[in-house]
Length: 286
Image (cartoon, rainbow, N blue to C red; front, side, top):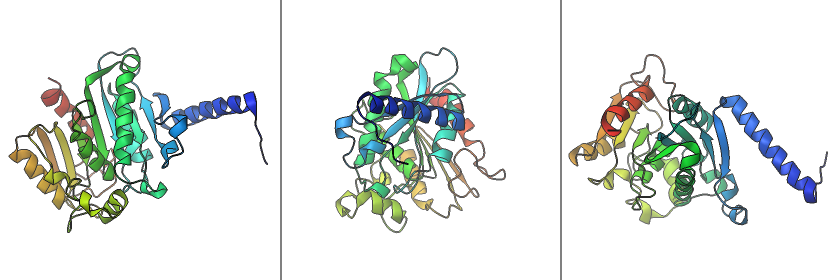
């Protein structure tokens, strides 16, 4: 069946579809979804897959003020996004605990994206959060990044931002991609992020770019991870500790990869998100 809309009918159809999407996502992931926001203006939306770049905003129940916020970055090898298990479920959990939680659907390699397009999407998400701070009750001095796998690498890039407006105030990096160098690189992530530009290897190897003013870091990796080599996380953790960066480091013998906030019951990674929030409250939010 072919549908043709013109003039006002087309406008009403767009509003109807937007409302349907909001209800559909809310029904799937709980009633805390407050806003779906396109990051690029219509005039720019069809450039380099920008039309797919969105944030999904989850807010705590009730009237809140001065809430911390997290930008959640799902993984997917910079190729696709595990946006359900490493995005919406995570956001709902944080919103239930008083955070404004934003799932970032950044551009991915499947649609031809490469560095720095993912970082551009993150910056627009930060602009949106800070511009909307009164609406959502956000404390703009407590906006962090929570990333998984390749999203963990993007969270690390958010921690290295030169402009304080965009630099994350804290980061959680869960089974993260760290390095772009052999032998510990996750090759699919490097392929889709660099697109063959070898000049970016050093710049995007996080272990080579740690400085003393790095924001507080929560880092978790499992030694039996079959996807992303934890060796690079060990190197990164050593650099953090050497430079005196505030950090909470967890390495667990078992747990694998891709578990989001639901590790296996016998994994030491179980309930990591609760330890993360406890660490924030005791060591970062002072």
